[in-house]
Length: 137
Image (cartoon, rainbow, N blue to C red; front, side, top):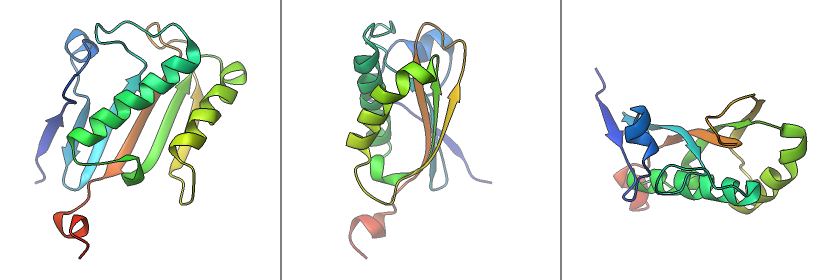
């Protein structure tokens, strides 16, 4: 049976403890990252939407890095939006910066009516690079 291991970024925000969840769980060579939001260190939302999306991606990258991954290791993305029609332009701008070329990850975007005070959330599944692939084998 594959063991599960909790993964947290070095400078984790207060939401993990406040709501009782792991930033990510490593299971075999897969990393399941919980929804990342544009939370400041105290767990409060970044008020500017575009900055909130950028901070959510920064929190995502910190969580990936804690497991030895990068954005290039992502295979599946799910994003949640409180007002998709108004927000997608800002999201697509950041998405284009973070994933500038093929192959793009699989992506599903969902409109929701509540994200605990946030307006954007991103969760991913990534494949953890093996030591052999890191060495170029």
